[in-house]
Image (cartoon, rainbow, N blue to C red; front, side, top):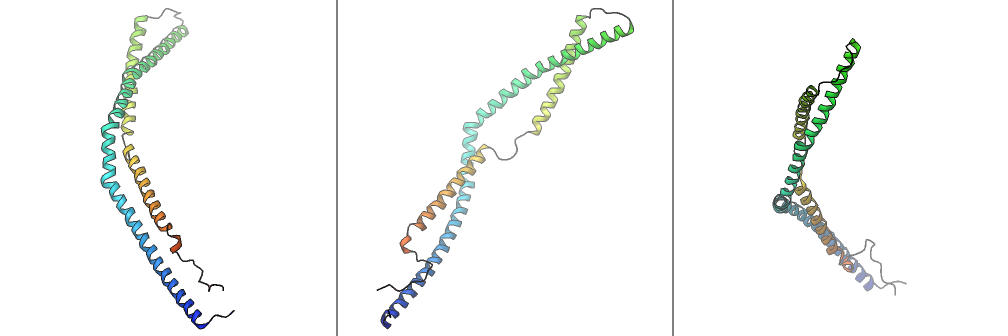
Length: 196
């Protein structure tokens, strides 16, 4: 079926309008992308200038005292209870070892077996326990200096997560806005003449 010249002219005109609309929509999509980039940049600035300091302040106000208290309690228990107990155990073990060596030497030299001096053993155990406690405490202090707070804290992690969630929300809103007008978009295929 052939179309009249008038219909062909109208169809060409309609196709030219569709092409212009398509070109303007491409420009609009480009502008929307630049707006989304700028929104992301502004969101990062807002996060850095407002959100992160607020989260950090709230962390320091509400959570940090409990964290510090827990750390101090753990250090107190470790330094004042565990280290002296471990030192006493190590000291006692070393004094028993010394006593066994002394007894072995006496037997080997032919002097015979005699009961150990308990006061001497107690002094040795106390002396070696103190020495072991000091060494253990020094090693603990060195380890604590190595594990001082480095890097980003809990507040920083929370701020990053909130910033990422906000960026995803902005991207989703932009996508919904651009997706909502499906009827206005022109397909990639060139327009065909209507069938009569």
